[in-house]
Length: 334
View (cartoon, rainbow, N blue to C red):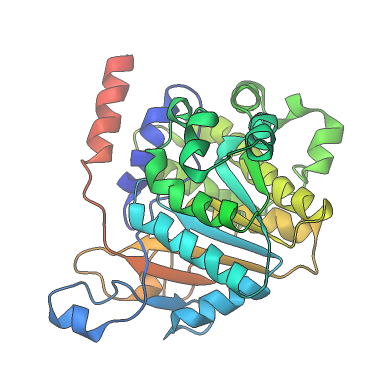
């Protein structure tokens, strides 16, 4: 079970009424280990890294090495937490320093913006500072481009391919209205959307959407968004696979942590598409006051580990109560 459905609502509330699902999850965030920080009053998990497979804390070097060795790496964020984006930039830079040149796939940009990405980066004087304005970032509904800029600083400095990863908004709305059948057989097959997730994953996905909407929408009413979420995960995976097939040295996904889940997120589609590929999923996770067992974050329990390879913990970002904001939006829409 997610520790705070409200964090997902923070990412969802702006997009929900427009019929668009952001795909973030109610997660908490990241770090490296510090006994001194704990003694100074910091949360005991802040800036520590948990290996889900090992059930133990590891040095951040383990994550850097795993990402550098992987064909596909997924760095799952909470969108409005600046620390998450500096960590994503750091991990991307570490991969470059290890000799890799992966494509950087951005959830924030729909696939139909790729021509604008290519035109800007292919022109004279392209800079990370100018990237956001050139792509119309402010109009896309994401947090301020300034907190994402460190990722583009690394990408442009290393001449990495930058890939618009998400499905276009009109396609999402079409699936929300008519289901994945509106995509046509060929596209569904190409994206592996006819492959069943399985009962457990189906239930988990619906539960996540229910919690992410703060329990304010009936589960039956969320069923159209299940198809949208699957479409977005499959499209992000397709962007990563296509980048590699076009010659990129692997791909790193920058996306909401919900997309990085190994049970029903992008990694499922990557493994269907390229079963022999190495896939590493990292969740940047905000700590919660009074909760110090890393194994119980982001859906983890004593018997079921969290659906990621690594949890990198960070401090929480101060934000207003997203469930209260979402409730207000529902009331205003009535």
